[in-house]
Image (tube, rainbow, N blue to C red; front, side, top):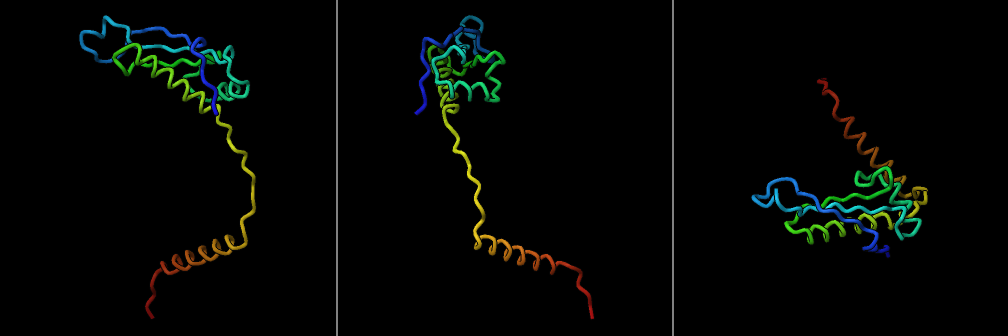
Length: 133
């Protein structure tokens, strides 16, 4: 189960959206910048480490997640979208990858591999030039 992001640790700022928007685009600041400081958050230490180790362009060198949401027309929907994207990022970092244990191939799988190589070699051997006798 992944930890939830606390709303009090998120900082929002309204900015003007880019792109087409008709008459409203120059008047209304409906786009939202979400800022979330990983180091000062209440997330578990392991999740913080994995978040900071991620190679994600939304995470700055100072360890702050910056997400810009501008797909919706209203500021409220953009805030909800940005929070959902932040939670998805935290969920991704909270997932602990299973450690892979190396195993040997079975005897049967090695035999099947060698047999398939032999069949393939036979097919390729038949591709040579045909000589007349």
